[in-house]
Image (tube, rainbow over all chains, first blue to last red; front, side, top):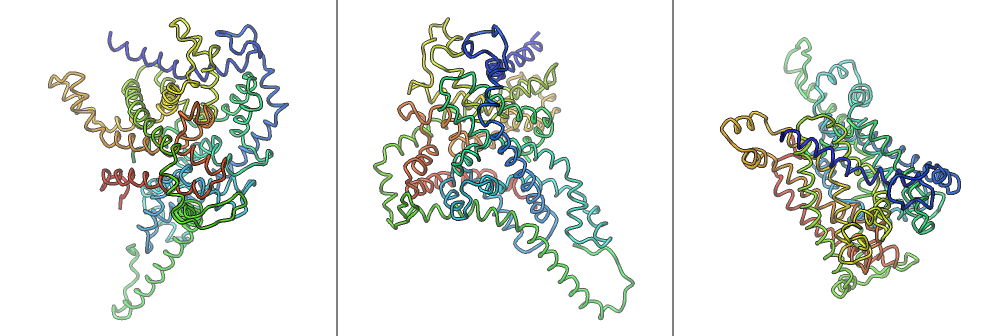
Length: 265
Length: 318
């Protein structure tokens, strides 16, 4: 009998854990006057979603986030895989030093360097621009580390064959290593996309121009503007969350693999 | 690298210098290629991580006005800290947050991992459900809970009304706001930490547990003497990771910013929120930089501990 107890408990707790998410989804589909009514809505409506999409520059916010998240993900994975290739497969003076240097930056989180990073970005003329949103977000040691771990395990023979065929280092990286790293790149792209789509603090710091607002800034800005119009705020929050949930469900297995590796390997 | 091809061997005396020279240029070519591969990321990390770190220490000695003019003030920014009550209060709040959040998140996520460790029907959905809050942004998390916690009318008030707690303002009462923030943070992070624990549990050999069971060990004894000791590295990682996250992570900023902006009565003002306010609300860049260096010092202390514990372990494989 005890063996039945824990699975049932797990299911109950799982429902409690997702309840807040389901609750805002349902509330976003209620008419404005019902938003605080406790229980099932008397009628369902898409008015809130419609209003948010049409009357607020929500499409613009979504587009900005998509542009930033996609470009950062692609460019970061490209640079990280190059660096990881060098660190894992090539021998050169200063390798250990460079590797530990890169790894030590893992301990620096954005809030810690926010102020001086802002000053650097300002000097480089990156304030209020897509470049300002994108460029500083690209560089992070985490991806380099995971890719390097992956590349260490690729058999040498594969590269040696390419070497004998007269391929240079670039060809070996591009035609041998990169195709082999598709699975890990897929995992990381889920992770990177989520992180950048969800980014708030840096966009808040680097942009003033409303046209550059990303989705997280857009929805948090509604707090002030639509203070008591909870139906609209929730609709916007749901719209912001949908892509992340979709990406999570689609890339779940890959994401879980990447997350597990983060902690342990 | 060892050369595997053996060309038909000419007299040794002739070959040796030529070979040495060839391998020299090969070495150089390899090194040059490596630097080229590393250049984009290394330069980026230097410009956008290392330089800001170093810069913070320099800017801390200046007063920066709204127009970006710097004037040297020596240690004045550091001297200001001594009398800055809000700084001390934000450090204290961050401290309280860490010592409540870290153990609570640890226990909850560990319990969840034990719960979903073995296979049962619907386990996939259960694991995803626990992880799902972590997928949503902290801004959305903040908005969700603000809505659920709206005074008197929110879902939580409705749920607690039968207990006579329907009137409690969780985010509006200074003594409750920080605790509420801890609970929400746990809800956000538990799925991620659960996964880390699950991965650690995978490395516990089943045979060891079975052997203990055959020897008559109770469930508690198996946990205490088999599973727990083997999970020590994982536990350590979880504690360090969530501590650093709680002091300087995004959750210390995003969530507070959306939920309470540090209020009520500064009861949830974390250090990173305070630094942000000094820099971007009051335009005291120099002072904010000085505060940054203090946080860095605290962080270095934490990481020093971390390296002391993980030495010889997971980071260097060569």
